[in-house]
Amino acid sequence: MPNTKTEAKIFTCGQSRVLAEKIANAYGSNLGNVITSTYSDGEFQPSYEESIRGSRVFIIGSTNPGPENLMEMLLMLDAAKRASARHITAVLPYFGWARQDRKDKPRVPIAAKLVAKMLETAGATRIITMDLHADQIQGFFEKPVDHLFASTIFLPYLKELNLSDLTIASPDMGGSKRAYAYSKALESDVVICYKQRAKANVISHMELIGDVQGKNVVLVDDMVDTAGTLTKAADLMMERGALSVRAICTHSILSGNAYERIENSKLEELIVTDSIPLKQKSKKIRVLSCANLFAGVMQNVHLNESISSKFVM
Image (cartoon, rainbow, N blue to C red; front, side, top):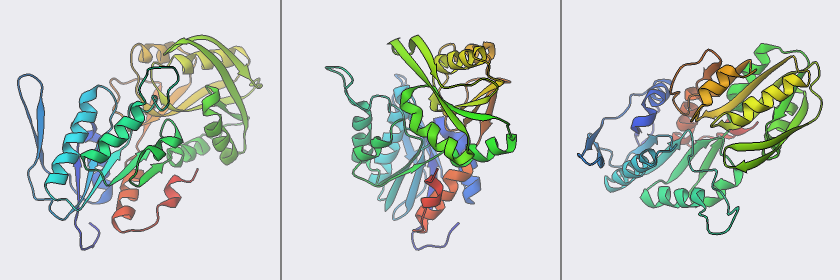
């Protein structure tokens, strides 16, 4: 535990306990004691079973839907504020509800902005998160946001694979900036998939911009939900002559028939982080832990040291 005047304590929400234990271990600490009481109607109440007055508190929890994950984080933040914690940092390995970051049609909410305000109102004085769906979400907060990049985890793994004729691919136009950043780091070519959606999670048409003939392709995205885009892109690239197709996605939401799609697709492997726990195992899914990344940043934040090296692509 670092020596500072303000003691640091690490707590977790229920959905992120496995990751939080890894983070606490990498930090050199233990998880704090929290008990959650649940009423018969499903309402729940977290309680800190140790003093946190004057402490720097880190609360770890991804806010992926269902809504109870976000609600638990809000209750934990509020309880810490009312218990007189000095600094309250919400550590969100996955910032949920981020796809609603703008009004893309009339009469819809901007949920990412709403969630940001809720976290601040509940008591967060700082946010640490990783690979936001859109970089501009940082601007929704009035408190400091440390936006980490999982590329610090993925790039060493990709370099170890030592793939010849490597090409980085973006599964859609919106991810082109991320793909170009990876391609620059790996000195590789880039291709982009252009897709049209009939509605959310349903692709009506996909085209490939660029040549993948004789290439080992790595698709790069911030999240994988139904895996419809990734698997369709992988199949398309193999049809166009790619030697192999892998995908790296920071957040493994994997809802609906995602696992079945991945197993039946032409993807060589899907590489993800443990920001969200997997619902089931798959021989095609490889998990790289983000625990050391978060632990290092939390330690630097506690010691008031620079963390810029942690979020440079």
